Length: 302
Image 1 (cartoon, rainbow, N blue to C red):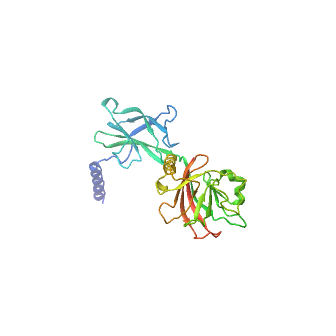
Image 2 (tube, one colour):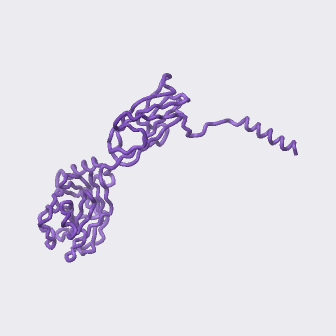
Image 3 (tube, one colour):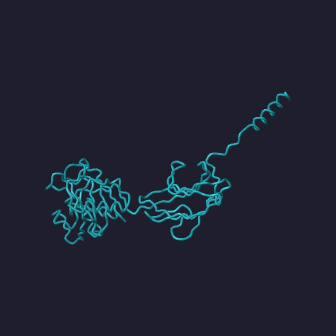
């Protein structure tokens, strides 16, 4: 029995002696220190505006010899980078630099990775910083506009695009200066569902007296492109609105539909000068009854 136990101990010792030690994967052997040298300098996770200048002033040190120091954005592999410096023997173990980059125009979080590699391109170490680009536009979803009702006058048939708020004739009177759109069922056109600016020739609805209201002159036009989903910044909204409203725009659009291409998007510019786009998601009926409504999403620059 003693010989058996002794044999196990000796075998274990031999196996341990023969085991090749391998460094753990993705262990960082580099240390990154960021310095705040003024406005726009990043020292940790930060929130910025679209296209802001962002500065990375850092020193990276490593006991292992570094050959390349890079900054990657949303890294998917070890070779892609937006900037890369090649080191010399003088700074192979410690490297200090300042880099100026520009934040993305689309909102959302972005990973910026400061990373070191050796001469063979083998990973040495890194530090990640999350740069979140805050949206410079408002995005309102599932706003419901109802066909105006003639008796109670409580259907929400008005929309303030900048705040995403819907109003009825009853609630809108005190907020008319905020209203950019009215919605109604237009019997004079083939596809009946229409939106209009309150500045449009009155009466839009003879049973709604808005003679004392503020009547904002929203400029609008239906257009198929660019798509609502592709509008990811205030700059994109301004550009799309400027292009589409350059000709054929007015204070009313008719024939809104979710089934015909080009009839489910309305580009607009408010009386306050804000560019935006309305997407028609759903219309629940085909007539002008008070139960009929239109579901829309709105994007508008801040």
